[in-house]
Amino acid sequence: MKKFTLDLVNKYQKYISVGRPQKCKYYPSCSNYTSLAIEEFGAKGLLMGLWRLIRCNPFSNGGVDYPSESSRDRLKERLSA
Amino acid sequence: MGSILNPLYTAVSWVMITFHDLLSFTNNEDLQWSVGIIGLVILIRIILIPLFVKQIKSQRALTALQPHMKAIQKKYKDDRQKQSEEMMKLYKEHKTNPFASCFPILAQAPIFFALFTVLNGISQNRPHGLLKGEYLISAQQASFFGAPLSGTFLGSSDGITKIISIVLIIFMSATTFTTQRQLMVKGMPKMDSSNNMMLQQQKIMLYLFPVIFAVTGVNFPVGVLIYWSTTNLWTWGQQYYVIKRNPTPGSPAYEELQRKKIEKGVIPNPDEATSGDTALEEPKGQRKQPKKKKKKR
Image (cartoon, rainbow over all chains, first blue to last red; front, side):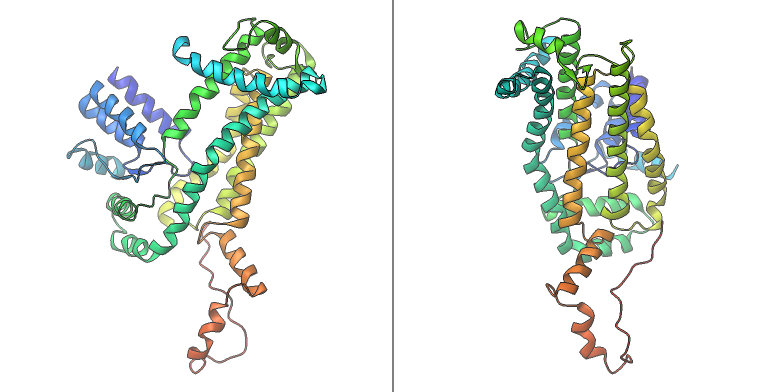
C-alpha cells in the first residue's frame, strides 16, 4: 500500500505535473511533501499530505513546511540524486 | 462514491437544465443542451475569476520584491533547496504568494467527474441529479452538429460522431498547445540555465499533451469533449488578455509593452532620463536600446 501510494505520487510528478508552471504555494510542493510524509509516517503521512493539499488554497500565504525535521535532508538527497 | 457526489450531480444538472430552459424560445433542443454544457463551463470560470485576479495581483506585487529575490538567488545560487526556502519565506513575510495553490485544481476534478457521469448517464438512460424524466429523454436526442452529446468515438459506429469527436480532440490539443506555447514564449520571465532542464521537460510535454488527449478523448462522450474544449478556449483567452494587458515583469511580453508605452510617451524612457548624468562618459549619438537580457532558449 505504501509503495503503491508513493508510486502514485511519483507518477503524478513524472507524467502530469511536469512541464506545468508551479502551482504550489509551499516549499516543498504538496506532492513532494506528501511523498516525504508517506515515506516516513505511512498511512498517517498520506493524511498529512491531504491536509497539506487543503491548506494550499487561495487564502493561504504558503511558506516553508516540511513533514518533519529529518525530511529536509531526505529531500536534499533526492534533489542531488 | 455515487452518494458523495450526489450534490454535485444535482448542481451540474441544475445548471445544464437552467441554460436549457432559458433558451427554450429557440425551440432547438440541440442548441439548448450544447449551450447547457458551455454555460456550465462559463459559470465555473466566472466564479473562478476573482481567484485568478488575486493571483495576478500577487504576482505583480513581486516587482517590489525583485531586489530581495535577486539577492537570494545570488546568495544561494549553489543550493536550490535553500534558495526555494528563502523565496517562500520572503513571500510569506510579505503576504504575497505568486502561485495559484493546489486545492482549486483538486476541487475541479470532482466537477469534471460529475459532468462525465451525468453525460454518460444520458446515453445509458440513467438519471442523475435533476436530469431525469422528460429532460433525460430530450437530452438523449440532442446532438452537437449531428453527433449525439452522449456518444463516444469508440462507442459508436456512427461516422458523424467519430468526425465530431476527432475535430473536438484536435481543437482541445490545439488550444492546450497554443496556451502553453504562448506562456513559454511570451509570458514567462527568461529562464537562467538552472531552469533549463525544466524548460526541456516543458517542451516535451508541449508535444506529448495532444497525444494524451487523443488517447483519452476517444473514450469521452461528445458532451465532455465540448466541456473540455470550452474550458481550454477560456483558459487561452484569459491568458492572452493577461499577457497582452498585464504581463509578468521580466517576460518578453512585458518588455514589449514597456517599449510601446515609451513610444507613446506614457512612461518616461529610462535611458533618456539618465542621459544627463552619463553624457560626459558616453559619446552621444545612437540612442541606447532598452536593456535586453541574454537569450537562452
